[in-house]
Length: 274
Image (cartoon, rainbow, N blue to C red; front, side, top):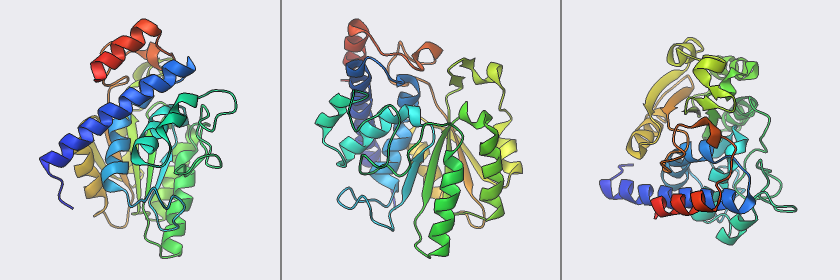
């Protein structure tokens, strides 16, 4: 499927609208995780609006592609993407993280259409993605599984156990996208627990590794399309992103990992995204 410059421009505009919704969600809730949600927005938009085999009218289609947001605390981005894609009423976004809302602080697959995994405990997403990818092969369904993990998250040992499983079973219908924004709740990943050289580590675990600018939609789509051609092993896309991408005063600052903007900051952010 050839992607035109016009297609890319449309996706960029959608990503801007999704970012605006993320800021509104977190501001209305007075809590949330804007930094990591903004960093993975371009990835989610590229998948849901261009590359995944999905239909919002058939959210439970057994042959649909699956998206696992292992870094579940960034769910404001997933909710906003699903709303703009037609899975949810956009008005529902106003209930984000409020008491009794279906839009909880971490996604719950039993409450909303389009959520393929209830996540929150970091490190578990790849294990579940492995199971889904294996079931697709065993049942000859042909669907693909995309797993978005955070770079701080992959300090968890379970991720590496799961990575061994991915390559052992030659899960070439699995694509792991690492949102490498280089920040986590306690500071820079390089200082908290260095994960580099990440490309060589993933290669040593049997993955085809692609490294890109994870906020460049053209590069994201090219990498995802490439992953669909890889045979007999899983793909890892190392997406170098900027935490807080799109809002100048949030970019590359660890304090925006889990902090809501005040009224002045909210208005400034929305103005930048118009």
